[in-house]
Image 1 (cartoon, rainbow over the protein chains, first blue to last red):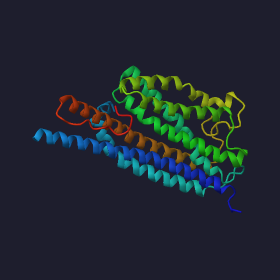
Image 2 (image 1 turned 180 degrees about the horizontal axis):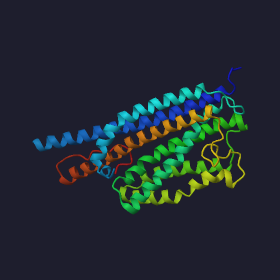
Image 3 (image 1 turned 60 degrees about the horizontal axis):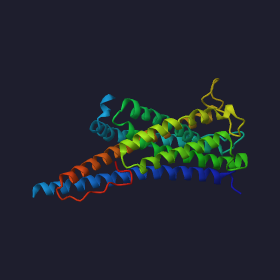
Image 4 (image 1 turned 120 degrees about the horizontal axis):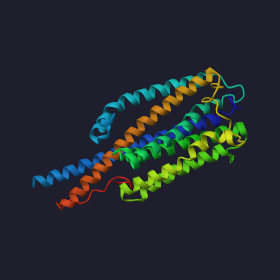
Amino acid sequence: MSAVPHIGFIVAAYLVAGAAILVMIGAILLDYRLLTRALARLQATRGETEAR
Amino acid sequence: MGNLASPSIFLDFVRRATPWLAVATAATFALGLWLSFAAPPDYQQGETVKIMDIHVPAAWLSTLIYAAMTLASLGTLVWRHPLADAAQKAAAPLGAGFTFICLVTGSLWGKPMWGTYWVWDARLTSVLALFILYLGLIALWRSIEDQSLAARAAAILTLVGCVDLPIIKFSVDWWNTLHQPASVFRLGGPTIAPELLWPLLIMALAFTLLFVLLWLLAIRNEILRRRLTRLTMIAAAEGDGLAVVPATGKSAA
């Protein structure tokens, strides 16, 4: 028996909330990384074309 | 503030505000969690009252975000603000995320307190409807290729869906529900003891700061996505031999 009643429900609630927040943060950061890479790639390709 | 309508000024504002907001959010979360776990147990709920410190802020945010999206929809349809549809689009996944946290933590509190994870009472059902509404808006944005058309359709759906907000708020007064009535924002003041109220309010502030931070970053992403799409189309139109660079995600504008 746990010293704190219903400790499993409390831990599960905090874990789910933490995971959901991490997913939201991760999705936004990953999206930003992909977008900036695609923009840099596009601008580099344009630069090469103009230099030719 | 009007200058923020310019995407380049907005991007500069986000770049400067992000570190400050991130530090403020982390510090407020640290303080809120410390106060929450140092607080005494509730005389009825025992230690499960700690679940309320994440459930209630997530519940407040789920409706607050939809209210912000409703204002952004008016910005799209009435004032034609250049960033309104980007703000509305960026908020929908965050609204879904916080509503998901609200529903799951509520279920995990309900099992030990009510004896069940779920009951089809008016408050729970209307919040589930809000979650489905968020998912519908995300799907709508992704299913229409013309982004100006998608923005108008999403704005109209958002305005129609805002009828759910007063239903959520007053469901505990209008119907006989298992969910308890308002205990913080009510006439006559909060019914919660200060030892439990302060951690709740600090956690609510932390959740709100987190939302503002993530919303700003998501709007920045939306501006970059549109810039990428515009440059890709220009490159394709110029016919300079460039292959069309695929935009990330399915929601390319």
